[in-house]
Length: 146
Image 1 (cartoon, rainbow, N blue to C red):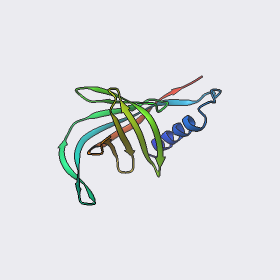
Image 2: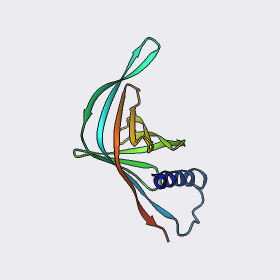
Image 3: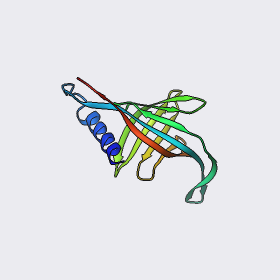
Image 4: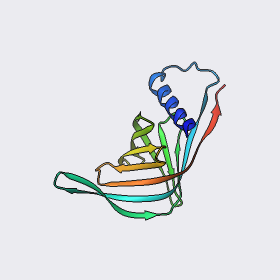
């Protein structure tokens, strides 16, 4: 788990700080792949000044998230469909990776990858629905530039 967090932090730093430096030799790159095994849906309920996330539904269903090596695109693959998300903004705090993303059809979401809790959370733009994926496995498909 530390290797994947370190890799994402390195890629994130490279893309934000060294974006203009194309002179790196022998750089290790690759896409990050995360498989999931379970999905839980929550709906937001507002009661007075309190906001609660109420359990909606659970599904045992596998899916896969693929983050390209430059952390600009995420592909979400299920048995039924493949969706593409474009990363508009990303930041990392205490090992949790937050992405502001827009789907291939124009919908905005917030995607949070939390390796410590082994979950990926997608929050819809209107903040009314939260979908939580239980992480199963993750790895890096490494490529080496020459």
